[in-house]
Length: 356
Image (cartoon, rainbow, N blue to C red):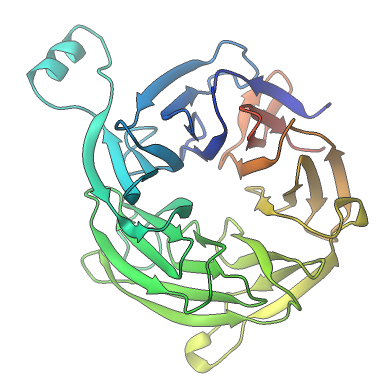
C-alpha cells in the first residue's frame, strides 16, 4: 500500500499491545511470545531498526504496554497475564555498582524490573493498558498515570513511577470493553457493552498527586454498544464508534459543575465497505484524521466530515489487535509526517504515513 512505511518482523506470536514514547522516538510492543520490544525510530523506514528486548517473568504473558515517567523510554509499564490472574510491572533504569560501571564504559545497561504487582484485577484479564502525563490543573506535569481496564467492571489507575494504585473505579456495567485517559491526564473514559460512555475527572491535590476520581459525564446518543473511544489530543473532545454504525464526536469542554451536558457536535456513518463496524479507532495528533480498523482492514477518515481518505484492505494477514499514532511528526524521506502504528495476530508491526 502506498501509505505503508515499514513492516517490522521478528515477533514470534500475536502482538498484544503497542505504545509510542512521548517524543515519538521509541515504539514499544507487547507480544504473546513473552517479550517486550522497544524499537528506536531514528528512521522509521529502516529495515534494520535497533531493538531492545525485555523478557517478562517466566509463566507470564504481556497483554499491554505503556511508557512511564521520565524522558524517552526511561520506563516501560507492562500489563501481564498468568495462571493466577493479571499483573502489572515496570522496567526502569538499573542501579548499583554494575550499572554505574557499564555507564562509565559508555555502555547502556539493560532495564530491570523496578516494581511488580500481581492479581491486580483478581483472575480477570487486562483489556487495555494506557498511560498519560499529569498535565492538567495542579498535576505535576511529569508523572505518568496508567489505567488498566479489566474484563470485569473495574478500572484501576496507577502511578507509573512507584506502582501505587491511586484509585479504583467501578463502571457498574455487565462487562467492560475498554478504557482510556485523556492526553492531559484529566479525564478517564470507559465503554462497557452499552450504548453510553462514562467519563470521570481525575482530581489532583495541591501536591500534584491524585486526590480523587469523580464521575462527571455520561455520553448518550448511540443506539447500540460502543466498541471503542478515543480522546482528541487537546483533551477537549472524544470520539466514539458504535455497533449502531455511526461515529460521534463530542465536545466535553463543558461546565459540567453547572449541569452543562457534553455536546455531540458531529455524527457520520461508518462506511458500508467496513460493514458498519469499527473495532478500534485512533485520532491523529492534529485531530484531522481518524484511523479505524475492522478485521484486517485499515481505514483513514476525515474528522471534518467522515469522508474516507484512504483504505488498506488486508492491511494485515490477521485481525488487527492494536492501533496508535505517534504523538509527534517523524522525519522520513518524504519529510516530516504523522505516523500510525498497527499490530496484529499475524506477528507483524506496521508503520503508515498519513494520507495527504
